[in-house]
Image 1 (cartoon, helix red, strand yellow):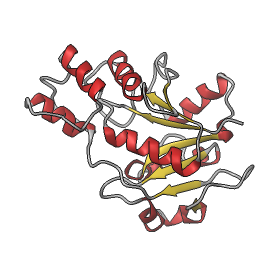
Image 2 (cartoon, one colour; image 1 turned 45 degrees about the horizontal axis):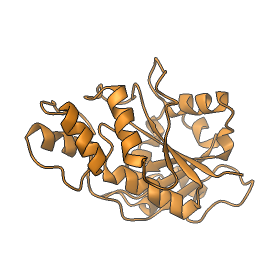
Image 3 (cartoon, helix red, strand yellow; image 1 turned 45 degrees about the vertical axis):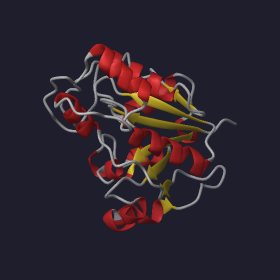
Image 4 (tube, rainbow, N blue to C red; image 1 turned 90 degrees about the vertical axis):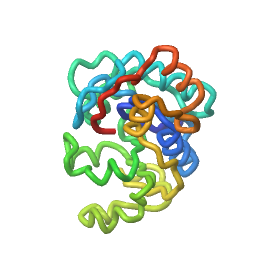
Length: 216
């Protein structure tokens, strides 16, 4: 059976930190594939600066030559906010069993899991893979979220086990989409912050040249 991960986000734009999270999860769990899913209408934040079409294009460019990563358009036809629980519903409608998926996220995002739509039932729908981000190490979540500590593990879950929260402590690049947009708006270089193909797409379409900053 194919072991698949799911990494969702706004990706406004996708950057090397996002890719580091995906790669760390893929290696730690021996996942065959990780679907990278841009949200058409992201929840919990102001509207994206780039359109859904541009954000999907940048994700596709970013993962084009990366083994085991694939851009997914499952959220591109969504009218409402791309809540994780709704994404799992759409995956199920396409024939995927959410219980067999590994939902990948950064530790900084998972720290706010109590605010996610569908919590706490969401935690019973699939495995979570939580990867360290700068300033938020995955193992520290045991102390930050003590009510979930007994569900957190440091090794891959046993076959056919119930949904778990797998903590992956791996280095990921200290970059955010907010910083990338700020640099572009200020005319500063973004070398090394996004894949070269993404940087070329941004330049070609003059994205973010006059962005007003919101949240990452």
